[in-house]
Image (cartoon, rainbow, N blue to C red; front, side, top):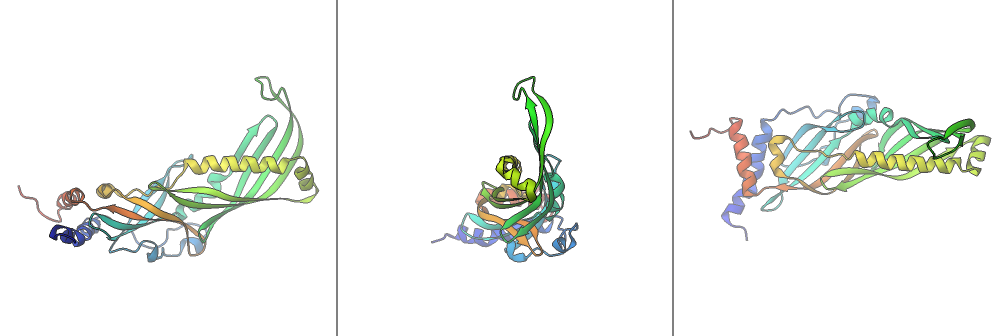
Length: 281
């Protein structure tokens, strides 16, 4: 049975949180601009972040090419005496626009082979992300391979292979981490058949899988709360990739945040600092 203090905290925590959020800059809930237009025109469905108190704030994803901006929506509701339920949703459509250029490049460069990936499209499909592109492999002779004196010789074969990769995401700690679930390669024509026979397609598969694993491990999506709400200390237990209407990329996280007495005191200090209530001199 809850005591009077617990009952008070049950309704006071969301109310106090709402006061903090109300004084924070809020953006429109419209989809972010970019291309393709049909993916970015859709509004993020409120069901992704439903709660008694909702907010939107900016975040960034660190990448090799520099930070990429995205938007985070969050909804918070009363759950238990010491925790509030949270549903967070990362709108990754701004990141999605940049992904083809970010993912395109050399996968592997060795004395005996060059393997290059060109990504043409990245789109969400339900709870998966579909990446389409083309892989170009060039094989060479190599003298004194794997020694300080190795030297590339003549080119033996070049092969272009259509590639379709399927990725999905799951919660790891306070982040969403992507993994490559499937890779389909389609070598075409007579050269494609020869490439299969001599193991070129297998080399391409190995290089793409290893390169994708490294890239995905380096770039989890971690939607940190704004500084004024850091004391809530979210703990996420479920989530994954979600499609925003039209193939837009998004990622959902479901969990809880701290609503203990010490956290409420910190939120009260924020409310006082912002002039929502007056402090006693």
